[in-house]
Length: 308
Length: 308
Image (cartoon, rainbow over all chains, first blue to last red; front, top):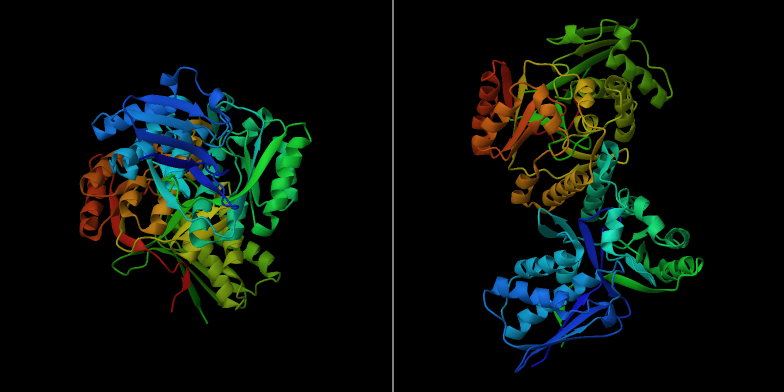
C-alpha cells in the first residue's frame, strides 16, 4: 500500500511571537499547499525528489531532510524501518519563509509512522521532525514544525507546543515572492542584544496577544499583530516587503509582517477584505519588479495528515 | 459623612511579568492589608498622615501622593474638590515592594470619588492614580496601580490593564522584611540591554504563563513562575532573599521571587503548604539576621473599595 502524507505550509513568528509562535496555512479554495511524502514497502530502498522545487534540494540525497527524518524516526521507534520506496514531492519553495523544510520533515515523519503502523505519539513525531529540521536551520525551533504537524496556531515554549485559539473570522493573505532568503542569513542580521525596554515591550505585546486570543478581544488582537524584534532588521533583506506591507495595510489588513524569516509575507484580514489584501501584497512586490503569488488562507486546524 | 477608602497591598512583576504583571493581596484571615484614606467635607481643607509608617513619608505635605492625586483627580473631574478633611492611614511600609505608594494613591482616588459622588470610571481613576504614582517612581507603570484598584491578577500592556484568571486553589505567602529598597535603586542595577535569546525566553515564558492561566494548566503555571529578567540583578540588594527563596521552595512553594522590586518576597503555594512556606520565608530572612513578618494571602478579587 502506498502512503501519501501531506504537511502544510506554515509561518513562524506570526509577527508578535518571534521564534515562539507559528501557524499552519489552509488555502480557502480547498487546495493543498504543502509538501507530500509518498512511501511504500519495497524490495530495495530508494529515494527520489520530484516537483517544482526538487532541484533546489541538496544534491547528495544523504543530506536530504527526509532521510535525516528516517534516521531519527528509527531512533525514536527503536527499530529499523523496512526497505521503502520514498518520493518527496517538493511543492513548497525553499528558503521562502513558508516552513518548507518543516513541511518535508513532518510529512516524512507522518508517512513513516503510517506505512509501518508505528503509532508514535504526536509528541514523539514532533521531536523527530524538530531534530531533522534543526540540522537544516542550525537551531531547534518548533515554531514551524509544531503547527505543521499539529495544525492551528501554536505557542512553542519550554520545548513544547501549546495550541492557541485563532478567531474563525480572520483570514490570512500570504504572498510568496520569487526570492530566496536563507534562514541563517536572516538570523545573522539580528542584534545579539536588545534594549531592556524593547524586551519588556515585546513580552507585553506577546502576552497581550495570547490573552486577547483567549478572550476573543479582536481589537486587541489587531493592536498586537506587530513585530518589534526581527522585522526592523530583516525588512531590508526582502525587496518589496515595505511596499507590500503598506499596500496590505491600506487595503484593510489588521497586521502584516514577514512569514517566518521571509521573504514570504502574511497579512491578517477580515474575509471581505482578504482578496484585496492578497492583491495588494502582489502589487507591493510588483512595484519593485519582484513577481509574487498570493493565496488567501485560513488556519489549517488539522495539520499533517495521510491523504486518502 | 466620612468616607474610608481601602486599597490593598499588591505585588508587581509576579515573577514572570517584569513591569507588566501585578496582583493584589487579600490575607486569608480576613484582615485588611493596605492603606486607608479617610475624607469628609469640612469648612477648611486639612491633611494628616497617621499610622505606623506616617513618619516615613515626605515631610512637606505638598509632596505627599494623596495631595498629588487630589490635583490629578480635579483635572480628570474638571472641577475643584470642595474643602476636605483628609487623613491618610499609612499602614503599608514604604519602599517595601508591597505597592505602598500605589495603595495610598488608589485609596485617595477612590475616596475623593466617593465623597463627592463623582462616579468617574475605573479607567479614569486608574489614570489618575497612575499619574500620581509615576511622580513617585519616576515612570508610569501600571503593574501595582491596576491590581490595587481593580483587584485580581492584571496584565498591563499598551497603557491598559487586562484581568487574567488566577487559579483559586493557589495561595501566596508574602514576607515583608525590615528593610527598605527604593524602586529607583532597584531599577539602577538592571542592565540597559539584554541578550536577544533572553528577551525571547522571557517573552515565551510570560506568554506561556498567560496561556496556562487561561486553560488552567497548573503544571505549566508552576513551571512559568520564574523571573529571568530582574531577579538575577536584584537578588543581592536584598539580604536574605536567596535564603528565603530556597527555604520556601524546599517547603513546597511552586515559585518564589521578589514582590515588585523587593525587599518583600512572595511564594505561590497550595493551601496545605502555605503556612509552612510563610514560616520558611521568615526563617530564611532570620538566617541572616533580618526580622520579617509574613502573611498567607489569596488574590484580592475586589480591589480598592469604600469600607462600610
